[in-house]
Length: 249
Length: 346
Image 1 (cartoon, rainbow over the protein chains, first blue to last red):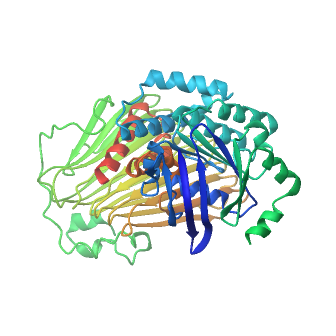
Image 2 (cartoon, one colour):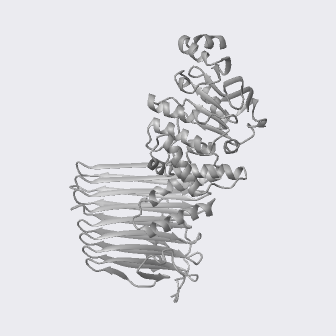
Image 3 (cartoon, chains in turn yellow, cyan):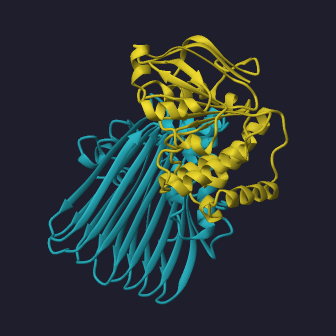
C-alpha cells in the first residue's frame, strides 16, 4: 500500500526528515511514535502534500503510484486522508457543505458520479450518530467555535464519510478526554479493513490501548530508529525516548 | 467642492482632489481633464433592474432626470426600487433626491446604479430623513461601467428610536464612491447598521466612505465592510465614527476586512474613531491580507481543487456581510451578485 523510501524533507533549509523509510501494507495499522521535534507532523504534512513541505530526495508511493508528483487534492482523490492535529476553522462554510463539496470533488476526479443529496444526508446522519455528533452541529461553520474534542470527532466523521484508502491520524488523541478518546478510537477501528491502511502518529501510548497497531515505529531525529510489535509502545511509555534520541544523534 | 458642483458649473476646479483629506484615495481632479457634455434627456428606459419583482413601486432617474423625492407617510410600509440609470447616451449629470420616512413608517429601499453608457460622469445626492421610530433598510447595488466616474452621496438624519440598516454592494468603476453620512441621535434606542461589500477586478476602483456622528446618549452603530480586490483593482474604505460630547454610553463597532487576490491589487483603509464622550464602547478592526493558507490546504487535503477551494473560501468570507441583510429577496440577490462577481473576476 504505502511505501516511503529514504525520504528527505527540509523546511526553510533545515533538514527535518533525514532518510526516512517505512512500509505500511494494506490491511494494517502502523503507529509512529517519537519525541517532540522528531518530525512526526512534518511526516504527515509531507505525505499529504502541504506546500512548504517539499521533499529533497526519496520517494513515496501508494500502490506503486508516485504521490510526490501530485497536488494535495490529487493525493486526496487517490485515497490519502489526513486527520489534522489542529483542524482548521473554515468560517462561513457549513460542515455539511464542506464535506459534500470534498466528496464530490474526489468523485469527479476519479470519474465517478456525484453523491445525491438524499444519499449524502443519510450517510451523514448515520456516521454522525455513531460518533455521537449532534447533527445540527453539521449545519454550523466547520470547526468554528468547536471544542478540541469536537474538532477531532469532526475529523473522524470526515474520514468515515470520505472513506479513504490510506489515512494518517496526526496526534488524534491530543485534547480528548477519555470518553471522547473511546468514541474516536471506535470510529477509527470501525474503518479497519483489508484494503485500507492507517498510520497513527502519536506522542503517547494511551491512544494505542484503544487503536491496537500491527506495528510500532520510533521516529527520532528524522528517521525510523526502531520498529516492533505493540509491545514497543509500552516499552517507550516505561523507558521514554531518551535512548533513541541519543542513538539518532 | 464636489463632483456635482463641477458638473453643474462646468468648472473643473470644483472637483475634489487628493489635497482634500477625505478624497486623497479617490482623486477626481487629477483624473478628469475635461468633462463629457451634459447628458441629454432620455425617455422610455424599459430594461429591468437588479431588484426587479421585489418592490411594490419603482422610481427611475435616467441621465439625472426623474422625480425629486419619495415620501413614506406615517405608519405605512413601502418597498421601493430606486434606479439611477446612465443610459447609452449619458455624458455628465447630477441628480438630487429627498427621501422622507415619516414617524413610524418603514421603507425597504432597493437602490441601484446602472451604467449602460460609456465614459459617463455622474453624481447622486440623497437626503434621507427618518422620523421618530421610522425604519429604513437600504440595499445599494452598483453596476457602473468600467470607464465611468460615479459618486453617490447620502446624508441621513435619524429621529428618536429610528433604525437605519444599509448594505452597499460595490463593483467599482474607473472611479466610484459611495459615501454615507449619518446623523445619529442616540435617544430611545436609535440604531444604525452600515455594511459594505466590494468585489473588484480589472482596473476598477471602489470607495466606500462612511461618517456616523453620535449626538445623543445610548446610540448603537454596527459596521461591517468586506472586500475582495483582484488584478489591478483598488478598494478604499474610510469609516469614521464621531461620538460627540454628551453622547455617553454610545456602543459603536466597525470592522473592515479585505482580501487581496493579486500582487497588483490595492486596498486602502482608514478607520477612525473620534470620541469626546464618557462611558463609551467603541471598537474597530481592520485586516487586509491574502486568503488563509491554512484553510486552503485543509480544503485541498479533503480533495477540493485549488480554484474551487479559493472560490469557496472567498465566497464564505463575503457571505458574512450578505447574511446580515434583513430583506430576504434582497439577500438572495446579493448572494447571487457575489457569486457572479467572483465568477466574472476569476
